[in-house]
Image (cartoon, rainbow, N blue to C red):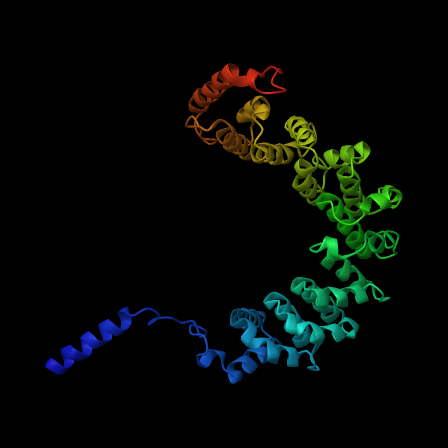
Length: 363
């Protein structure tokens, strides 16, 4: 009996220790889960037929981190393209500069996914050596490598001459043109490089057949002070394509906050068929902009027939005024009306302290 009690107490104490119930095979650095045999097994599982197994192996190797780099580099020579591509991607996530030289030859790999992942991995490593390899990638004829190299420099816009990007704005492959114009836009936004010398090429790019190229050319020009470019970015906020709208909203305030305010106000009254989506986005963006001049434009949206628009307007008004007045977008009509009345009273009392407040608040 005493022996049974002692055994029971031992189990209770053991299970109460940190990590006693951990199912994580990589719970301890240097433990059996991180030895060479385990890493080799996980690398082999990257080419497993079941996607879930591949994902688990990927996650385990990323968590092991630098301890897996040597064997991952060796896997880059594996005859299985699936494994080479997966190993390249993981090396990019680990971002160990020691992988650069092993990744470099894969820019000429016969399999497109391997070339793509290798270029992305080099961009994620992002040190001088890996960026030098990416510069070499720009000399390739393969559009996959060129496009990924340009896209890689978007995260390091100061590291590539603007002329290198500008020279590819007329490339026949749209992904190359997209990478080139995104890089020029990022340089203009961050005020690095010399994109101002590429105004003519950027102006020509606004006539491109691809909407993403056009928008980013306008962004670059707007960031360089071009009013026509700014008008184009503002128009992007109400574009039919959600990806165009998202990109325009992401940059417009950093280019011209006053233009952003005017654009969001106008978008709240958008007459387009998809206006409720645009109104929700504009209401949210006004709150993020932090300009109290937008309060008067948000108030009418509290009565929108769309709950998501009412909710977005309410959140932004709470952010801008510092109080929610108990507003519930799905509450009863009378309850919502009381909250709206309090916000209107606040606005009528305070609106003259803010620029652009002279527009009447619709009932």
